[in-house]
Image (cartoon, rainbow, N blue to C red; front, side, top):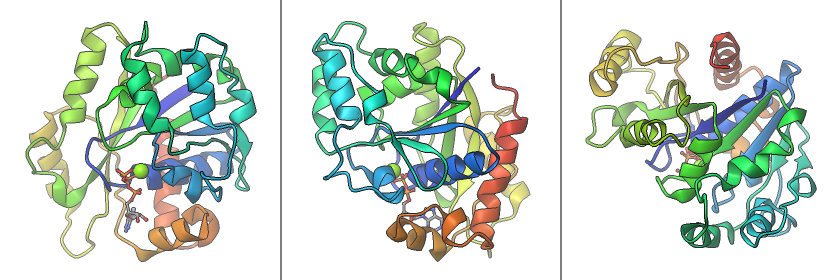
Length: 262
Ligand SMILES: Nc1ncnc2c1ncn2[C@@H]1O[C@H](COP(=O)(O)OP(=O)(O)OP(=O)(O)O)[C@@H](O)[C@H]1O
Ligand SMILES: [Mg+2]
């Protein structure tokens, strides 16, 4: 069974894209078949994987647009092999236009799920990098997913509305769009080594999210290597395999493999 993990959080710049590419690279490194989906018109994942969103064609935009126009979207044609052993379904800026077209479509929440159906069988994992919103594209990701990984910037833990994504997940379940949607876990990112005591963090999360939410044991610390690897168009695992950030994402991958969210 393919596990489809949406990486979602409505706040910008919390490490969604960084988590998607590095988890994709780590899982691929463990010989799993992985498809990374860039569902963000910003195209950061596409760039981070070493591609130019302005140059690639077709992309997920073409596949979604065909589907919306009543044709069969050809996802296969829009999948590219990365240098790091995982496949990429890239984005392009025009993807932002799809959000509007979706509004007037029948089963508008299920277009992505339908699209992924045709390639799902080729992968053990499909990771979907979402944009920082709770718009229809994100709803599509949450409807297609088996679970959601929620990256949370450690300093932002106590902020109001920090976990709006959780009530969206609850709505998705309740409206029967995806009743079995699970939470893969909350991943703490960009932690400051000096201040963060992991026990305090766990308590803060339990306070905000309610007890019983799964929190990844691995905490992602701040490191300049992440931004450097993004500029280089590589995962941190390829850019600097020995750096603590690379080891952290390898651990996240092992935790994901241990979770029973099939
Ligand atoms: N652990 C980290 N330490 C330091 N910098 C990081 C870390 N994780 C990510 N970054 C950097 O922070 C910036 C934002 O990260 P990223 O793009 O992954 O966030 P995002 O949630 O995908 O943002 P958006 O909401 O805009 O899509 C990037 O420049 C990235 O390289
Ligand atoms: Mg992003």
